Length: 237
Image (cartoon, rainbow, N blue to C red; front, top):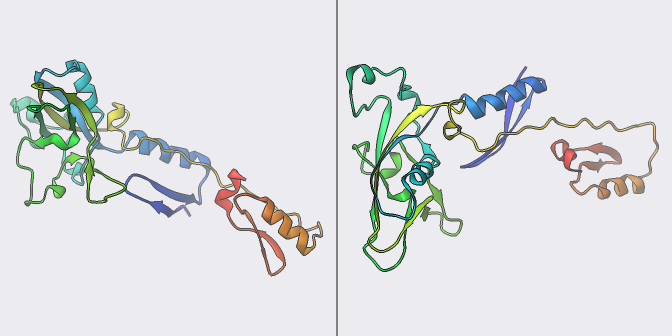
């Protein structure tokens, strides 16, 4: 029976143990996570104004690299499934979400434009709290202050420089383009099999010496019995 045990889960990563299957199924799951899970990502970018040091193509690429998160991905249609193309609907709310990036430096100091400057074109808020928008750029928080948000740098503006960009976020999968891949890295490793030869007679001192020789503490001595405990650390021994 195939089972999954969550070992560690955080805001940006998850580590789990998959048991009851062979390596081929584990690798298939890894490939599905990379290329088959639907996500939202910037697709069509329109440069309205750009007097920064970066060319339009660079700005489009940097915006395309910004990950967007949403709990409502399943509610969006793929562009080829939507009827907006047939009806010539310019601002479709079924398969797209629209955003604007607008900034102008009116001061003397260099201004850094980040993903925090991105705003929704249409009112997607279900309440006054911005954190529950259906679609929004991924948020990072400072390690020193958990309440301080950190934006992804896009461009720096000198005095009197400005940018005004409108772009669409669409639904897709990683096999179409890497920007739709939900993970930056997905790997797996088989659990090692360690067999202890019980025919070798070891005294207590020798058992403790073997246990202490392992840097990741794979082996343990419990009531005089020599056994191994940290299976998933054995490959690093």
